[in-house]
Length: 470
Image (cartoon, rainbow, N blue to C red; front, side, top):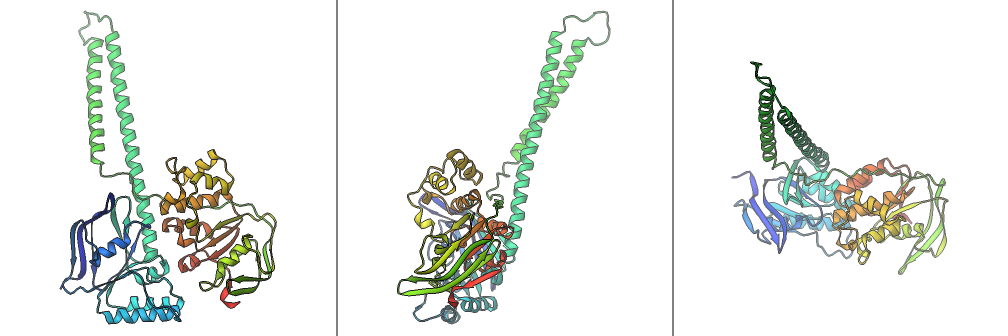
């Protein structure tokens, strides 16, 4: 019996004019746990559906083993009425256990699960003898359960594969990308040097030729070669060397056609600059807020400069409502919210992308940051949002471009207080990883709402306000 429960060779898929991937090949071992990653829209769910036999490839072969029983679970759909996240997970696991599948395809399985549910699912996947291919934005989940990562490259339409869990993948991926760019830069530098040497030799030949032609007379009494003949010899020798160098340059360029500009960009380094504001950032005193037919509060909270707060709680507990009261976008029914002096806020709302339709990239950036057109375009260009994008509707930006747009705004504002509401929801993983690094070194005040366990651990928050305890 083959050690692979599934393999595919040179498969391609295209929807109308859009090519999803081309000539990709990989295999999944029995009992192997694999994470499938890539930017939104890169084809992760499409690939799962091909493996599950739900849609067909345009070319190539799909080869499940003879005993393969493949189960595709788009997400854990259960009757949630009256069930906790832990109970939802238990029902889902029971269904998977009795299904008889030996290769599970899980698409965002951690959605709607609380900590208990996540623990149940992690234990089930880790201990199972069956194989799993998992799409998940929950990087902590991938860290605990997978032993290999397959990344879809949306530019080259190919795959990159890495052994290890998610953290191993992140480290090796950055190392690989830096190596790819080093090779590319070395090739450009070598080509430039060879071109300069060819031009120097051609210039030398022309100078020698000019000297020979300018030579008027050679004494007939001199038995040695006349100067013009000597110059002709030098000209011939230099010409031969120039031709050799041209041939070398041509062969070099022909031989490096395969080393193209890397498809994956070097990380965008994120470093926040901010002027310190007052010691008191926010003072929340006896705040009560009505939300529909319920109230939250009373809330008493003192946030000082440099504090790093995690606002936690179940969905619907009022986390976003609290943030909007801090921002002054919502008024409490009782109590007061005081803001300190010289507090400059950078805010990333969780539902922002949904509200961006109809706004032009450059206009919105200038409105939020206060930058003039020239400076705004320079900043956006630094984040790879060029002249072909700045006059477009924001809704036309790709997920990666939108992520860079948000970070460019934050850096331009130079906030001394950052308020982030579920940043993992709308930042692609590349930018999110770099944002986490920038937040570790951030000296201002940080207030975060997030279900992303990986992010919360990375950015080292030191205070927690649990809305469930109100």
